Length: 450
Image (cartoon, rainbow, N blue to C red; front, side):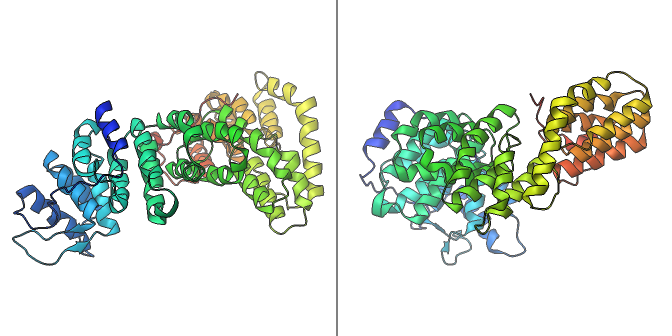
C-alpha cells in the first residue's frame, strides 16, 4: 500500500544519535502562516473524506500525488500534528486526523520514491523523535520506506521501550514494518540479520508484522526464527494462517516439521495454534500426530486437529480417531504398494484405462498435491472425455499446485472441459473469477510440488 527513497549514512547516524533531542520545526498545518496553494489543496482534498458521500481514501490519495513533491511536507505535517487545517479561503475549525484521512495520506506517500520523500521526512522528524513525534514518524516512514529503513524503524521503537512503548506506538511500529515488507521483500532477510539484536518486546512485534504483511515469503524467516527462539512457537504459529502457504514446497515443509513437536506441548493453546498453522502448510508429515490428538480430552483440541486434517487432506471424515486411523492405514498401503504402478498407467493404455486410473486416484488424499501434478498433463490429452475427467478429478483433489494448468484449460476448445476447469479453479481457490484465462492472471499459483 506504500512506496520509498534514499538516505546517506551521515543522515542515518544523525537520526539514531539524536533520538532524544527536540527541535522546533515550523508547522504548515497550524494555519498560523499563509498557506501555499499546494497546502490549501492538500487540506481541501483531505477534508472531503469527512463527507459520507465524498470520495474514497484511494481516490484522494491518487489526487494528492498529482500535486507533485510540494505535497510531501504538508502530508508529513498532517501526520505529525494529527490535524487537518481548513483552507484559508474556506475557513473553519481544525479537524482531528481521521482513519480515512490517514489512509489517504499514506496512499499518497506510497506514490513517491524513497529518494524523493526521505529528505522531507528527515526535515520534519529527524531531530524531533520525542514521545509525541515517534508514532507519526514511524507511520510516515512506513508510507514510503524500504528494506534499508527497517533498522531505523527498530531504532526509533527501541528508544521508546518500557513505559513509553505504548499500545499506539506498538501498532504504528507493526504497521510500518509490515508495510515495508509488503513493498520490499528484501526486508525478510534484513530481519534475519538483525534478529539477535532486537529486544524481546520488539521480537514479538516483528513476528506480528510478518503475519500482517500477508506475504508467504515470510515463512522462511519465521522458520529460521523458530530455530533460534523456540519460545516463540505459539506466536509464530498464530501468524501462519495470515500468511498462507508458500509457493515453494521447501519452506512449507521446513516450518511444518519445526512446529510439529509442539503438538506434544502441555499447553492447550500451543497445540491449537500449531494445529491451525499446520492446516495451511500442505505438509503431510504431521498427519499421524494430528490423528492422535482427535482423542485428546481437553476442550478445543479435537476440533483444531480435525480442522487441520480436513484442510490438509480434503477428506471430510468425522472427527473420530478410529475413522482417521483406518483411512490413514489404507492410504499408506496404497501409497507404498500401488501408487507407483498406478501413476505409470497414466502414460499408456486406452481411454477406458485412463478413466479407470483417474477414478482410482480420485479416491486418495494423502500426498494429493503430488497426485494432482501427476495427472495434470492429461488436461492436454487428445480425448475430450479424458480431459473432462481429469479436470473433475483435479477439483476433487483440490490442489492449488495445478492452478496454472487449469487456467490453460480455460482455453480448451471443448465447452465442457472449460466449464470443468473453471469449476475446479473456483473450488481450489475459493474465488469466483471469470471463465476467461485473463480473469486469473493476477492469481499467483505455485510451480512444481517436489
